[in-house]
Each structure stands twice: as structure tokens, then as C-alpha cells.
Image (tube, rainbow, N blue to C red; front, side, top):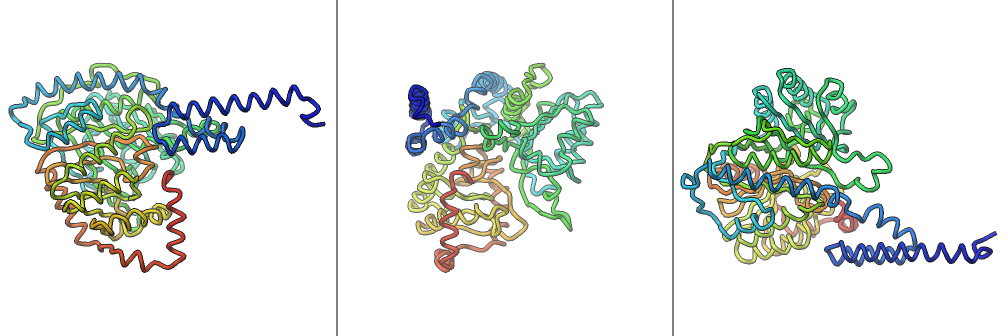
Length: 480
């Protein structure tokens, strides 16, 4: 017995499948911004009947944008209002803006946020320094603590944070902890389970248990944000895990730079955390204690740049492109993963051909081998145009910093890869000020002094099998 014995049923199923395919194709044409993505999905839908349509339904629809748009709009209204108050409190006459106005306009156009003056931004080099500052802030908290981390291991480092958070809550401080669901699974038992058992209010971002896994596996919250009392903030690329302490005997030591923020831009960190918390926990934190007037404490102008596969998609990439195109003297980039999209490769090459000193520092041994293999292609192409690439020695350097012309700095959680710039939720801060830039430049020079410069001859000397391996890895670039 086959469908041919039931012609009406066969025709009905065929019409249903074609209707599904037409709907999926129209959705892709209307919703996808990149032509290559549209062509790829529509081709799959029609060349793989039913299977292609199902795959598009599971993996091709951006459900985050629909669910988070209202929250984001509300938070942005709050951020703009708080920014106006902070600007008044900072007194613009005390810190006149003397930097690249065109680049500043790009950030405003992309995010809708104003640059905020009067910030003190402190680089915290390596885990011991960063954790000490963060734990000190938590132990001195008096009203609120909001903590978001991609990875929060239950180990020596994690236990210190859990103990400090529990003690703060016992003092009457309101504590909220958000951990990405995938990142929470790097240790057993999970820190989330332990925090829940100890009475902390903690939740995970987009749980990936089946069947949700199919829709959200790639949409991770990669942000690292801590805001205490609405007055002091921390962000950067550092997770909470023992390896960042680089202690003897550490299984996987990692070097990194985190940042402490004092001043009005803390409002932007707080707004990002509150939006993520409301999205993940379905709890709106609207009491006055979560919103403070942050005084001017420094000379740096700064602006938070949220990015993610929602209404904020491509924010950080566009800011990077704007900064590279505006560079006149130098561009320094430190990143653990370097597989930039074509637009960024072209921008770096054009900058180098204009005479800009473009330097990229990457680890000599990347913890994800496929990423290192795939990076050989973009590295080869930028070396040919005059960019300089350096490989830093172990321990693995997880630092994420970009400097332009001695006055503009970009710090935060994003890497130079499609996963960060297209699939994950990230948070960066663009900073205008020579003092911060000089401090970071000194750290980069120290790293470069210990590094080895790559050449086109190095890439040409790879074996045929290595070239084939790297070429195959490059095909997976959109998902690495």
C-alpha cells in the first residue's frame, strides 16, 4: 500500500509541502538581510523538499528579535534619559570633546546612545588583579549587585564569588546572577546549582535542553558584566574560572585584561544587564535602587555598545569598520580568535595600503584548533597587503582590545569572528581618551615584545596536508 493508492492524500501532502516551502522562501526573502543567506536558504528549501523547510524553521528564524525587541526599546529609552542626566551631572565644560567627531557620530547613529563624559576606566591585567577588584566591590556593596557571565565555573575562583555574593545578600543587598546556559556547564556540579542551593537569585540564559536546543544553540550570551550599587561596573572578556588566575598547576591557564568603570558610562552596563535579566528571568528590576546618578570621576568619554542577533545585530562590526576607515596612523588589535568577515578583512587591507600601521596580535596556540586553522586564510590575505600579525606565546591570551590613533579604544567581550559578531550577545565599550589608550598601548607593546611576527613565507611553508586542513576549516568559518 502506497500513497498512489490514495491520490487525494498524496496531492494534499504535496500541496502542504509546497505551501510550507513557499512560506519559508518568502520569510527568508523578507527577513534575511544578506543576499548570500537568502540564496543559501531558498536553495536548500527547494532542493531538499520538506527537509529544507523544516531546517529553516528550526535554524533560520531569528526568534530572539521578536521576543526581545520591546525590552530593548524600553531599556534604550531609559538609557537615553539616564545619559542626559549624567551628562548634566558631569558638566560638559570640564571635559570638552577633542577627539574624532566623525567616529563619535558613527557610534551614536548605530546605538542611539550619547557619549558620556567624566569616566575613569582602569585596565585590570590578569585574573588575580581583576578578581580582587571585583570581589572588593561585591564585599562593599550596599544596595544592588547585577552579575552576568558566559562561563562561571564551580572551582577556586567561582567559590570566591559565590561566597561573596551570598554574604552580600545576607547583608540585605539585592543580588541577581545571570549565566549563559552553555557556559554554566563547563564544570560539575554547576555553579548555578550551587548558587540556587545557597539561596541566590540566579538564572540561565536560553536553556538548550531539547527541543529548545535546535532553535537557540548558537545564540549565547557571551557578555561579562558586573555592576555594583549602580555606581561601579566591570566588563571585558574575562570569565569566572580558575584558569584566569594562572596559578602553578592550573589545568588551563589563561591571560586576559578586564576593565573597571567608574562614572556615567556605568549606566550603559547596568542597562545591558537589566535587559538581559528581564529577558531571561522575566523579572523587571525597576526599583530606584537599581538606578543611580553616577558622578564624573575621570576624563574619558565612553559609550556602551550592545550587540546580538536581535535589534542590535552588527553594532560592534559597524563600529569596528568605522574606526578602521577613520584611522590615520595606527590600528592595534588583540584578539584570541581571528576569522573576520570579508568586510573587515577589506577594511584592514585598505587601511594598511593607505599607510596606516595595522598590527594584529593572536595566540600562537588557540584553544579551538579549527579556529586557528581557519584563521590562516584571513591572516594570509592581510599579510599580503602590509598588515602585521604577531603570535603571542602561552599562556593562551584571551584579551580583546582594539586601539586607533592613540586616542580611541574598544574593549569588551567580542572576538573577531562570526560567532561573536553575528550569533552571540556581546557588550563592548568605545572609549575616547589618550590616557587609557596609552595604558593599553604599553600592555600591547609588552605582549608584542614577547611575540613572534608571522610572514607570508611561514604560510607558504606549510605542508600540503596542512594547507588542505586549513582550507577545509575555512568552509566552517560562518559557524566558528
